[in-house]
Image (cartoon, rainbow, N blue to C red):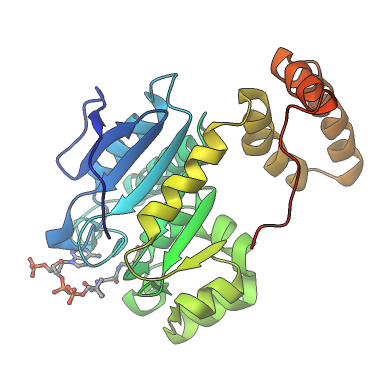
Length: 271
Ligand code: 1HE
């Protein structure tokens, strides 16, 4: 991946496996443990939770990438091999859930660039983010099946929602991997770009998300998935309530006025 450099530091205390900078309103968080293919150990997962709960208020979107040739090799298998009891293992999985909830239901939309291996917990992490951009080198797998373990970072819920239970069963039962095109067709990613173009695309998308009103982004991140999970009639009521809150926000008043007075952009066909 290529990177332009007019980035500033972000004052959040992170482990060495995570690096964070910002470019205006968009933060860039990097998995920085390339020597272990960005395998997610406890320190990194806790660092992700810290980052997303302590994000400065003026950061309006986040780009997440992985350093080296792969996005992430998933759970650090050296840690899972440790001698832990059942409750410790449950709590370990719950820690992943907590960290990834902080991403999914955080304040800022997260755009992730996927390249190389995006497997196991790496795919679970990507699934907790909001927009996924794949480079052509990306491939996806759930080797939990072959390692004798199971999903533990929310994949049963989030990955299954993205691609459906039958595809998750296929990946786990057979050890199949999906290439970038197959993953795109299956619904893992919203964008597919040439190798080396992911970062640029992600920053472009993040800048757009960052320019939305806080209320709209809150509704999209927090209300929409909850509406999907509720029964339709409660969902529709929540939608009306959320729409009312958004419509009454001062930013919406201004933006609607801008449109009606012909100062705002039109919705035009793109490419
Ligand atoms: C690791 C890990 C890891 C690499 N935990 N150390 N995930 C997996 O089953 C995937 C396992 N990894 C791989 O299949 C390959 O490493 C890759 C295809 C991702 C990359 O291959 P390659 O040839 O570039 O690298 P490598 O030589 O295999 O790995 C480099 C080093 O990273 C090596 O350590 P070294 O000390 O010998 O240099 C590897 O041992 C280490 N490494 N992946 C620990 N995953 C919450 S539940 C989620 C459950 C899961 O995620 S299960 C899926 C686990």
